[in-house]
Length: 593
Image (cartoon, rainbow, N blue to C red; front, side, top):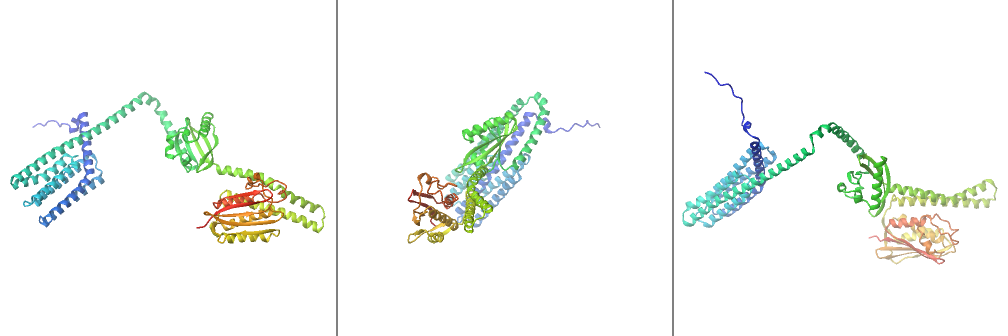
């Protein structure tokens, strides 16, 4: 007996042509999408099932045997819980296309079980003696079926396996009941079931067609992108540029990594900007809010976020950096929270037609430079006279012999100039702390009357030629203040009042309530001030240069300190004066609650 030679193993896939394989893949994709859709819609249907079962139980309890109603509701609850567990496991499993068919079958089995449960309910709960309960049961089952159709139509087998077993038993029961009305009801229920199946299958076809159209559209878009990419990347250019592109990409990636590391190490705000001024990249910090939200900067240009003149200077600096290959630095001002801030931008080339811009807030540095220049200027001016006096009288006493009374006179002058230098330095240091924001205040409720009496008493100890008077209401308010700094203000104003009243007279310290503030004033009967002097009296190192005040000493910082301290208390200070008739200094303080 002869045997035919062994034929090679042939699989069904070998007979599949490309169009057939594509059609099979598309069918599989649609099936997966249908399965995913039906599971996604299942939770709402399960909740609706439990609610409907509860309503049916409520309607039939007491009409049908209670044990039978409860057993049926327990069965429906168990089926619903099992289906819920199935849905939960599906979403956790995230099945592949090959596994989707098994999950689809399990869902159909669950839907069929639920439909059979409703059909069983028809047999158990059908009440021959109560036509109203028959209508109620029919309404609930048919309504549940209509609702289930919308969530189950994605899979035709699921919707049909639910509709038939859930609706046909009630139709059969009506037909078996006999009687013209019952037979009509049975026929109507049966036709409703058939029509419902037809509508569900039509709905299923629409869903399938929609999914097919969606996948077709996706494939068309992918094909369009593939064709466009093939058109753009010609084979000849790929062969010519492959090596160069690989090297360029490698160098760019290494350079970008190094740049990123450097950017993260620098605390300032940084941008990568094109020659046209468009923001290409950024590293944000607190400065971002000054220009724009950091996330939106990539959609803007330099001209969009900076004032016109600043943007023009910035673009000129970018062009200069790119053309010359050298780092450019320019400074500019921008308002920030109501204050004008100073910034420095350093611009360096980082790529073809690209620059990196490092922006730093230099407001504090500028202020330090200004204060330093001012300090050098004022110190050289203000310290020259007392130092010259100390040096001159010291040299006189070292080179010549004087009588003891003359020596005491000269030593008193030297001590007075030394005290003047000490006061000048102390006042200047206090003012620097206040202007830099490093001065701390202890704001508490301070009884204004007692503090005014204390300050007036301090000045009265060292004064004998003036009449010091206190003008207070019967009830003086308490103010929110730092007691030590407030006393410094009062003694400063009182000392000035005495000092600028060289011929004596009355000095009055008074206070009264004005709205929600306390108004305090110091009035003297001294030399007074002209209007041009009043306008500058609170300026640093200002002293009036006239015959009446030329011989009156001072640091020129006392009233500046008064202004800073009152401002720190959220108050205001001003002066009213008439030449030859005296001056009145006013300031306000918030009343303590």
